Image (tube, rainbow, N blue to C red; front, side, top):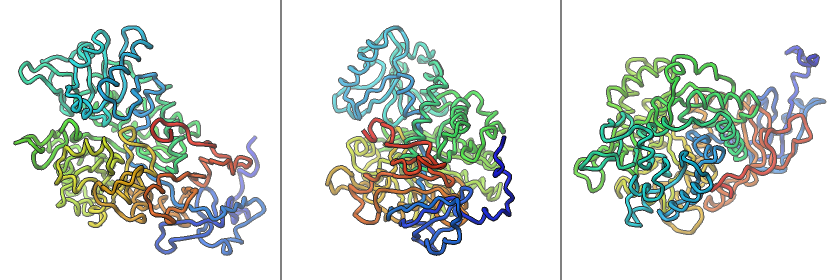
Length: 582
């Protein structure tokens, strides 16, 4: 039988009291009227009061749980606006090949392939990640089918590069996928080919590698559930209370709904449906966009977004640029759809109230996208939908003000805006002039626009604190090298980018993103005050003690609420995720 207190009148005296009161904290609120607070009172998942403890005594009733934070620093939860837990963790649970080396040499890659094949005998696929082009260049080798055929010719091999922009396959994989010289390039990518024969050379660029995935067995539902569960667990343990999971299909939405129904979706998720078969087949795309997506809707889950791939990435030089690539007379990269197609689709999605999240790494791609949004605004008026320019790696200075004018979100990802061998080697392909304006948070913010960040895991680390620190420094966090990669912003700006701006990008700024009475109690308790020391080599070491979503702890590192009715779903140390907290 349902407990009697489930039927309390809304006018009951107990409704005047808080369920939870946290005090003696240092709450950085992002509320301009009250930037700092000492205490918060919570009821029904909302912030009943934010301010001084002495002003909340009347909210303490006989059943109110009161906890002393002992001076801990608290702030709104983080928003990761571009990430892929499934793509990162599926190899672990599907037992795919994981090379396990950050930037493997060809020799190391070959050994990993042969070791995997030996431990997984038979004629099945050898599928996995990662490889990088620059180590092949340094070794004087060309990646592709010939190189893979020399390593393992008799089984299909398909390996993704670290940026998820290129898949390298051998001849057997091409054969099983039915790909040969007569195969036309898909609209959303292309096959690199031998200049004389037209034969595919085994490098599938951008959406072209969906042709390979279509020939492979689909990812099992159990694997998708495990991957999302582990990703959600880790993000909650690092203070993320909202995220955008991009490139989903019906199977991935089913996995997210499974977690949601089980009470394990401990952050707010906006899932973006793939517009084309950019990575894997999306068999019910039209049904989802026509309305089936609403089946998955809940307080924590929304699928009211669509992901487009307008151009490619830097390593294969498929980013679509306004002027030619360095060393090229005419090659500017590739726009995966015509401007007319892009405009029609953006206008249509806008009229349906569906957010468009457009992959634009090159400045010409984002220019086309902004033109399409401008046309949508002209035809539809402002629909209330804030569309999102994904990656925004290189933006033309003349377009910065258009983000504000058109209410388009400038989302910067992956979180690789600081010098590392991989990032520096890859991004240097853009040329020195373009590198001066790479990941231009400062420019967008100065023009009055909304900038957000995405980790783009697994392309870069999923750890948001690494992203936050390097927004402020634009320097390598593990050494003393003074080199910068682009222009830094202030800590106050970076926190806003990671919190309230993220809420705005999800259309949730009236619900979350700052600590104000009436808003959802989505906040985090940290082991350090981010303002106490210089950011470098400090912020990325942050440990999250508590993560609250809708007024309940969803992650409790030290088990502070384990003996109460507010025991968290996730407790203890964060899960071990390779390359992040190893």
